[in-house]
Image (cartoon, rainbow, N blue to C red; front, side, top):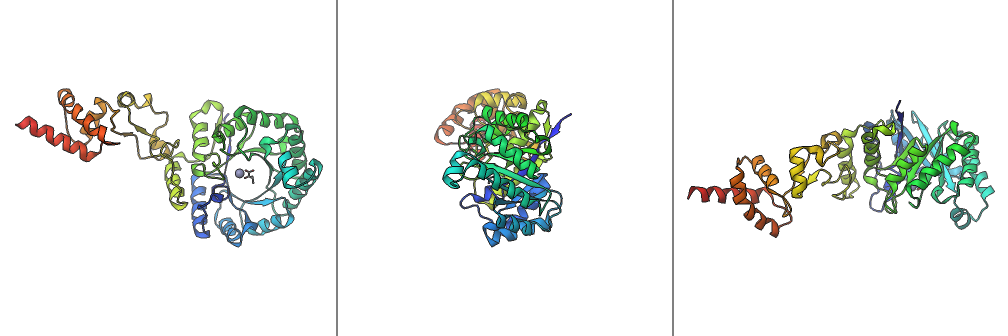
Length: 387
Ligand code: KIV
Ligand code: ZN
């Protein structure tokens, strides 16, 4: 029996922290409704105490979203938690996400505290948050660099205090996948009350490992992934929602599923890119402009014989426009014939042999041979045949 992995979307919080990605309340509400339609389980709508604007956004989203849980971030500070409770009070399902740094880097440099003091502040915050909602998530910031024995003590204490979800952030994107997976497994095996909470992955992409780490975390025992559309987030970004959703879908043998409607992945990626004015890199998995483009002769020939030779995902299944055969100086005769055919020219093998050197001449002068170039080549070829 496959198990559900909950998708916690933080595009509106960690994603919106990216310089230049700030959204106003109307934009945030619009996006939250789209995330709900996408099928995410939890929407982290913002950090209510951070600004009046963010408070208003969280509050409006809480009023309108009905199917997903609406979550607000806080520090382990009483006032933050009260403000989040107020912002979330109209939510059908609300969650307070509170926490504190647990690595020695954070304990010493940020808080000038001891490990025991941090546990005390963490449990107080969770208990306080439980006055506002039954759904309290605790984050152990920089858990990626927190030693596992101490982390297990923190997790056990916050669950005893009432946390229902425990987030294990790799805040600095430092962990290797096997380390992050082992961290989750260690917590599953060494925290006596772990069955009372869901473990959550929250990975950053500083070494390009956010997606791999999140999947390793799930294999290690986590059942929630925190992620953003297009992988937006602090510095190098967060785990990309579209990637983890499709990995769990394509590798069904792992035994997991999510509630996300994959057909909406490309449309929502474009909307987030437009609204946040953040272009998606063309080679981005699942949602990049080249994710389903084939440009080299060997690949094009194989793809035209059978799409499965070079595509593991059907583009329509993720709402992309379809596969593309792009013509460049690396393209071969099959691709050229295919593109002529698409333009309505039925050239036989002999025609293509004659046309191919002229095509390469054009291709060597341009990055991509476009329809108008093909039209010109076809017209010249047809005229030469007539004379
Ligand atoms: O990366 C991180 O540690 C965070 C926490 C606030 C959850 O974003
Ligand atoms: Zn983060």
